[in-house]
Image (cartoon, rainbow, N blue to C red):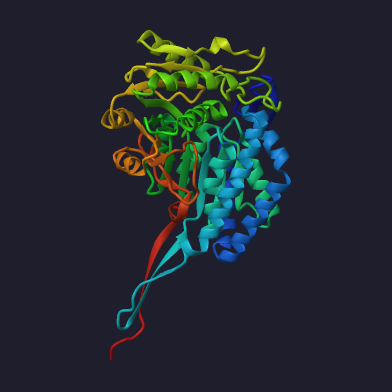
Length: 465
């Protein structure tokens, strides 16, 4: 990235795909002014108009689904079928957001008091800045863009430097859907210029998905302002496999939950705790199941593990695996057992059994195709280990006992707790986290409400004589 151009490299071909001009500091005021002008029109639109525009946006996405998916794959490397799945997932989330918007954002009338009428309004904030991540370029951005539009806001999308075409897609197809000009704007910007956008007095809300370091930088940029900042900063998500779990189902889903999208998922499984009575059997079955992974051209239908989006992550992942083995872990799935393409930013899968709780593989976020497994002797030990983390995004339990799942889930320090599933967002449930995972919520009615401000309407209708 130069001062003037962003250059995007395909992680499989390792060649430059395209370059885009970067937003310059002197252009920031104009960008925000355009958003404000669009907001002044859109804030007076009806909910029916907003929903209709979002529906037309979704129809435009559906028509261009194949092209959008190919753009995702060439920018960040996920297998094409997974990119197609992401487009479909985005449309599904949109359907839910549109279905709940009218009821969620309606005025809330309070019981009558003699001589008074009282109600609560949910008013749009104004200009929302959405700083979206690269690993699920559409799903992460849609969590903010569509609710913001439904709530009556204007949106500036600053997408990751690895996936800028995703932001451009939102701008172009919302404009095609008939919203006011510049209601959804895409900007391609450096960290420094993004910080200036955050500090702009007419930006009213910031949503950021990314690293803990990035979250601190966003908070620092916003520290002099009284605006809300939503942060989703990743995780080290645990799974607990109980002795009464559906064994084959748990193995298959704990594999997919750890290695889908090459492990580049903030809610993917990164550490697994297994009841000691089934531990060795689980490890053996898990290692056998890993033989189905094929590294290769992400455009090829047989590929189910593409290159990583970042070349430099390989060093971190290799260190985590080596440290776990040095501390007593067993490398039951070795990267050396996979055929690696001659080109591309690939990291082959690694699975370490008996990974000590205090090793980096079980404590530091990996965000790649590696996982550690450990035996536990009781639910209490599993709870202690699962909570032993700086992060708190999701956790999962694999059991046939719902009462047990609820009892354990209520003690787990995460924003989402799953039973017999993982690595999935239900748009009816708030997506949120605790500890270093961040704060705020997207999705559900709470994600919509976060993009509004409260106004109390207190009206005396009977003036005493």
